[in-house]
Amino acid sequence: MGNVKRRKVDAGGPVSHAARATHHSSLITHHSARTGTVLAFDYGEKRIGVAVGDLETSIAHPLTTIAAAGSRAHFDAIAALMAEWRPLLLVVGVPTRPDGAEHEVGRLARRFAQRLRGRFGIEVALIDEHLTSHAAEAALRETGVRGQRLKRALDPVAAQCILESYFAAAKQGQKEMGNGKW
Image 1: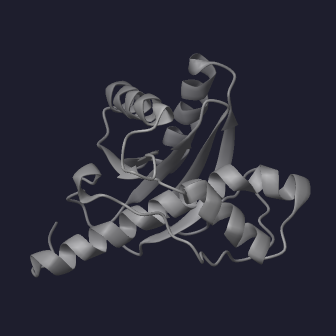
Image 2 (image 1 turned 120 degrees about the vertical axis):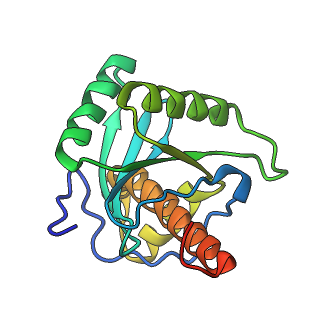
């Protein structure tokens, strides 16, 4: 993956994730390529957090926040990221309620994922993002990030948590398969 560029994110150092998002295997699809770039999205009605990672190393980094300025502006900003990072896979977090029922934003996140797939023609994996924003906030606070820095870093770090959850689930799927293929 090489040199990772960070935009609008200064998390104040490495992030240790004390709390992890749970994930449901029914939401996960495994990508067949073993190497390449992945972009992950923490979809929200006000902002979309974006993280970048690598399939081979399973390392994720917070990247940027896309402010809600309308659907067209969202997709223009995403198109620029797609051109820059050339991902093989996109991952979208789908929020659920504590009882497992889909959250209203979950329905919107699924629609967002469908639009990504339709617009860019790239595989989109869905993963349960239950409590990723809380995990991201706790991790940032643990490293001393507060105030406006926390607010700016929260969405991309939540997207990083989503991508790390995807990588963990993909690795678990590999171990269960026993042959190293997804």
